[in-house]
Length: 313
Image 1 (cartoon, rainbow, N blue to C red):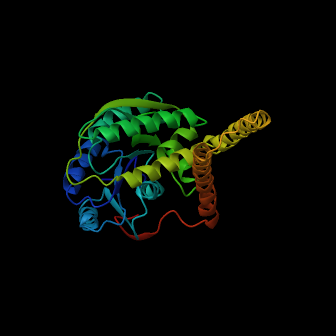
Image 2: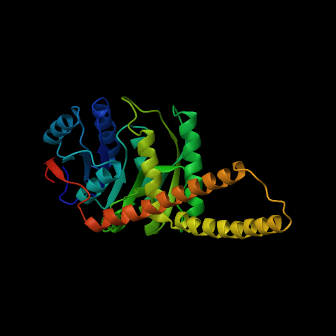
Image 3: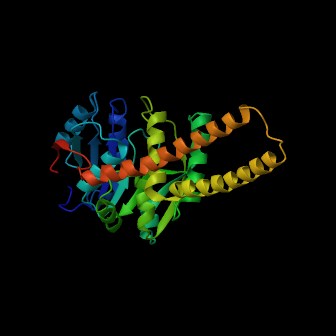
């Protein structure tokens, strides 16, 4: 029987996962069984699914006292669904795991062991990415390494949101007010003792992947703009470079004019104008991205809206 204050909370964001819910529930329950005496809760967060995901969560919550369900009023996105689950969690230790079963719940005992040895955060470090396209593997590798270069603090490479955290860490994450939430970066930012757990990432158990190219680009923007000002500094460096180039070009024009050796033509001039304008628009867009995020933060809207709950939340 679950105690009033559970020892372990499992947070699972779900979006159109009807094909995997029963197997997910079975494997999570089996992984949590050794901690039944201490108490555990499994919090499924329905992120605006349009299939039977929420109906299945409700049925599980009514049948099993360990299951909690949070239904958001619409699709707020993966990070907001995770945030909703963290806010609802009560356990002294909290695990985040995706619903697709690419990250095996059976690693929970090993994560617990590492935490018993002193870790405040145990995060899964992917050794392989089975069944993912070459484009996704390459783009992910480039993204993580670029982020490591520009970030003002170390963010572990080749990781997702799959991790186990102590209550103190969860409270610090929940206290962060920002709207653009890159969870794995936020966890790295708070510090404490963080230990990796290498593992082989499996293919999705069932259903189709929900992380489109558009969503991955948005995630990359959240990561770069949320944890580094280096992209904006690039605008200054580029402007300085262009200024030096302009003085050099002005000197060349002056010498050519003095020697009556001016080049008559428009191709080179047009090329310079087009390239410089392209860079200017790109950098203006980058600066605009930061300004847009300031605008989003200034509205102070809630991270998510809960439509319904099940299981005593």
